[in-house]
Structures are given as structure tokens and as C-alpha cells.
View 1 (cartoon, rainbow, N blue to C red):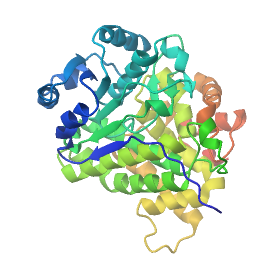
View 2: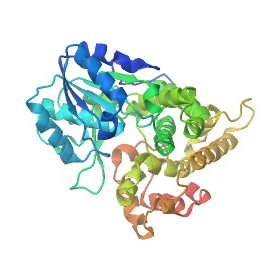
View 3: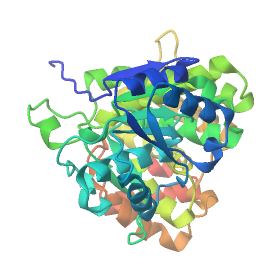
Length: 409
């Protein structure tokens, strides 16, 4: 088989303790007027004040929007953009968790091209470059600092919706693990579980023939030889340090591993895409109002079990990246089974709900959730094992009941 690979990434990625102090220099090479998107909590911290002071000292005018809300409600983006138009920014800086970074992407989009966010829902709807975006994550999970997607909640739709375009990739990502030390254990767990799910779904995604038009027609193209390297690296880092960071948030080595794992997972799925676990979370999250990372992690062992029939070799490779079978003597089926067990163990240890029932999904909405998940084509097409209505309903029923064996059927 000939090699095929596709990656779309920021032109500059800076990672390491203290790298937030490079923000002013990066911004000064980008423009002279910066809209900064963050949330009320982080805006009140000394670290944020220090970064803004440094940007202003570099001669850059700053307008701070500190009202970003979780899941980026559609109308809050319009309010941010309306407030910023008169300021006429020439760059947008997102500082905070994934919602703050997605707010920055959406604001940059509307400031550049106008219209309504709904004009851009889906893939390749953004017509041209947007204002340069600088992404400074303060959590380790979403990977939004390096991905081509922004997710928003639309009150006219039951499910959250995505805007996917290479034009939404940040010009620069600045990742400083020091900024994650203040994350409480619950957020550390949910964000880190999201990152591990990104990495595993990207690595086990459908592999497509390397047609020259593939990446021109799809934002997410399935696994490739480069995305695989990022995914396996992320799995190794997260498996050795997520539990440590959850247990002791002051463990800076663990924080570095988890943030680098989240970054690498973003590099992987930003091109490869994710699959069935993410598709299920869209309707389940809408019904249960639970965090995205919690929902995808709850589903992941069941999806891995469902996919094992056609992806045992890939799931076994995941297991070896998790540190299983160090001598390489077990067969793929055995290692794949061990990988699913280990993912389940890790998630249980950090407090991830083991079933959809525990997430709060009403039993009488299982069929509706299955129907909605099956309709998210950009994710379902990536799953290595084909899903039809019966299979999706069976998968959700197994995840509701906590029956891993049943999800293999």
C-alpha cells in the first residue's frame, strides 16, 4: 500500500511552560488591533491581566469580550461581533477553553464575511480567509487550537452544529501547560477524556483511498499515515498522565503530558475526523445537557467494541500505545479486548459515567437519539464499521444498559 497523508494545521504552534509570554510578540507580527475572546472567569485572573498588559505594551489596541458562554450560543456570537465592528480588529485572539476558542473563530468569520452563522453550517461553506486567529487554550481537551471546526448551539435546532473549514484554523496556537494547573479535577477529567476519544476515533477511523480530490471535497478525510502518528502519540501521553493530572492538579509533568496529548489529538482528528462516539453525543448531549467530553467518553468503549469486528488490528495498536502487551507477544484480538478494558478502567477512575442511563438519557428517547446520530453524515461516514438504523439502536441500547458484549453484535 502506498503512503497517503493529509494534514491542515496552524502555521505556528508553540508549546511549553511559559509560552504564553510569547503572545505579545506573535500578536505584534499579526496586526495592530486585537479582539480578545474569553470568559468571565478567566478574565478575572492575574494571568489574563498579564497577557493583556503585554499585548498593549507591544503597541496593540485591545478590545476584550469576556462574555463567552459554554457551547457558544449562536446569538452571543452576533452580540460580540456587533460590539466589535466599530473597533475594526485585524486579528482575533481566543484565550480560554474550547468555547472561547470557538467564539474567536466564529467572530473572525462574521467580521470577515458578514451574514449569519447559519450561512456557514456544514463543510466548506466559508468562502475565503478570515481574520487571523491566535488560540491560547487554558484547558487540555478540545484541540480547537489546531482544528478547522467551530461548534455552536443554535436555539432553532435541537442539536449543536458545526462550521468546518480550513479557513477556521488558527494562524497560531500557543499552548502553555501552566494555564491548565487551575483546572478542577472534574474539568480535567472531562477534557482529557475528550482528547483521548479524539485520538482513538481518529486512529480507528475509516481509511479511504488517497484520491487527489479527497481532501478537496472533505474537511475530514479519515485516517492517514501522518494523522496516525499524532493519534498514537496522544494516546501514549494521555494514558500515562491523565489519571495523575486528575488526582494531583499541581503535577506539572502530568499537566504537560495531558496538554500535549490534547494538542496531538487535535492535530490527528482535525484532518482525520471522529466517528460514532461523537455522532451519538450530539443528540445525547442535547437531551441530557451534559459536557461534550463526558458524553463521547461514555460512548467510546461501546463504539470500540462495536468496531472491533472490522478494526481489531487498529484497536490492538491503540492497546499497545496504552502500554499493553509491551513484549508484542499477544494476538491482536486479545490486545484489542484489553484496550477496551483499559479505556473503561481509566474512565471509571476519573469519574466518567459508564452508561447513557447514568448520563440521564431517558429510555424512551433511545430510538430518537439513534436516528439523529445516524443523520450526522460527516461523522458516521468515518466509522470503520458501517452503521444502519438497527445497528445504531442496538449500540445505544447496549450503552444505556451498560452491556459491552451486546454492543459487539
